[in-house]
Amino acid sequence: LRRRPELRQLEHELVWIQADVNTIRAAMLPSLQIGAEIGSFAGAIGHLLRPASLLHNLLAGIAAPVLDGGRLRARDEQAVARQTELVHQYRQALLVALREVDDALSAMRWLGEQAQHQAEALGQAREALRLGQVRYRAGSVDHATVLDAQRVLLATLLADEAVRLARYQAAVRLIKALGTGA
Image (cartoon, rainbow, N blue to C red):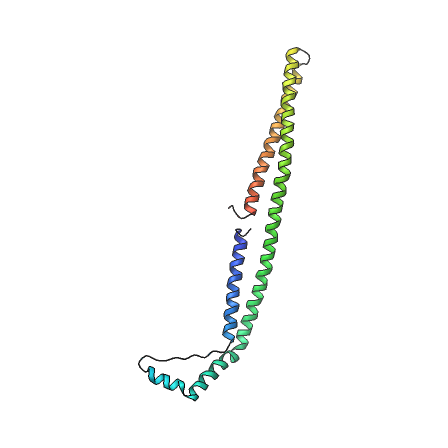
């Protein structure tokens, strides 16, 4: 079932939305950024290590998420809602996939039984035709009996082919349900 395209698509979307939730939540955390320009590296380090600079950077790192927290919180709630929706869609798609596999397996089992019954009926129809031809040659039955046995045999052959076709179609449905076909 993991090969089914709709399930794979939903799994990928769930991975992406989880990454989005993690990114949003990381953005909500305070951060301290230290930067320096090329050419004045030593001066920048000295400037950054001053207590006022450290306090300014620390307060800026804390204040940015707090001041922007409403927008980030809304994005987080939206991402979590989308994640919940995707989980629901995934469960629904999985239930549909399981039902399709179960239906296809049931059809395969039932049609297998039908094929056995048809094989028995075909053997009996062939035997009835053989006996009808023997009796006709012996003169104990008329030609209508042979023709009737041929008609029954042809009808049985057609029914056998119909069951065979249905089995092939059920096999294709099973392959599709398992996600291994087109």
